[in-house]
Length: 86
Image 1 (cartoon, one colour):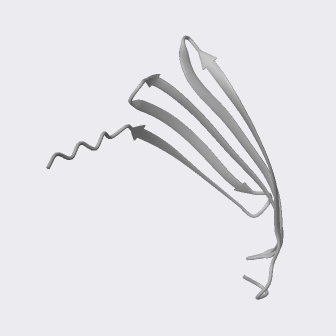
Image 2 (cartoon, one colour):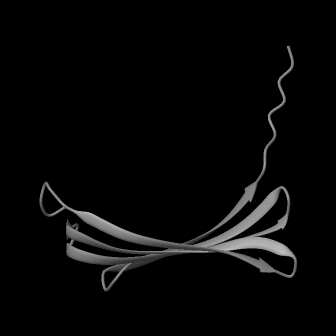
């Protein structure tokens, strides 16, 4: 961080989707950060998720700070059921 104090404002948009009978979602987040690591930064974060089965979800995510850096990641999530018996 350049300075000790910084501000961050974000706008988030979410939309549920269905593709080929599979539930999913699209999430977009726009943001502006003052005095970030390299000065003021504009951010665009995107997430796409699709659930092919009840216990499995695939996600693709993109995290971007405009003109400074870009990072992307993919995820797979599996529902885990906890069963404890005493």
